[in-house]
Length: 118
Image 1 (spheres, one colour):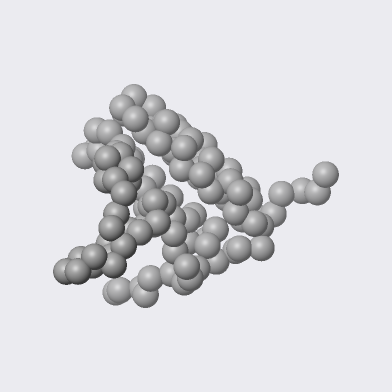
Image 2 (cartoon, one colour):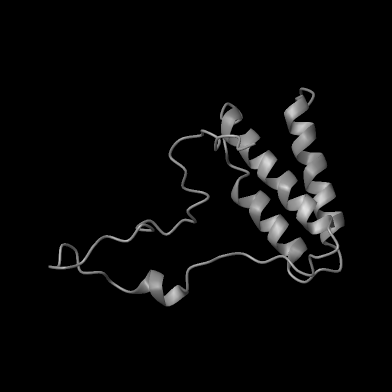
């Protein structure tokens, strides 16, 4: 088996740090595990997206470590909104932004990172 790349080592280190920072905060450890499992199937060649998710995880780690964070939550669409059948093309209706059931953060079509606002 080949040695892990630098990026792989950084991601694994981030995972451990997030788990440590989430101890004692309701929902944090489960959320971290779920988030990493969700993105585990990303191809190794998708480096831009992996780096974007890594930076996002670093920002979440900073928030968890701050004294102000008491728990880790997530924005999710209520289940009944997902299960409701929609009328396609009905007069006066507009398609919703979240037509696919994945999270908006996870359905990025372009691996571009947001511009650096300094």
